[in-house]
Image 1: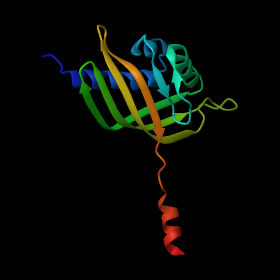
Image 2: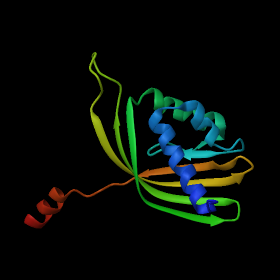
Image 3: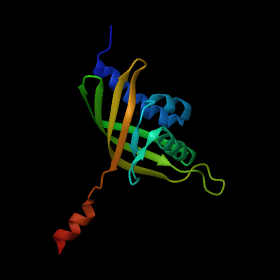
Image 4: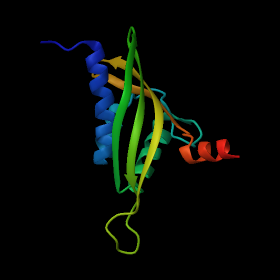
Length: 148
């Protein structure tokens, strides 16, 4: 049974995150278009071109001992040979070990992401990734505001 374009794009999006979890830079590089690409990591400026974008992932992978993505709210929109995926990245990560320990402290983070894919003869490739942190209000702050 042949998969639909939406299923193929969902699979390409999942592969993108699984490749980052494995820290497989060579495979990650193959997922991006060879054309002009762009990327915005949370808190970073816009990166453009394969060199800048792939260097950023090499840097992140070199400084992240552990990362796991739980994707929620995944939505795919298609327009011809272009696909737009929006999702929430529920990220659990840990930095390199400190002073001979096994792993730096684990940190949880919520990021909303937009991934743009383009259909090529080799399948769906990433054209652009944009991640923005979700700034969540804490319940404690809300409680303090109402108590005053």
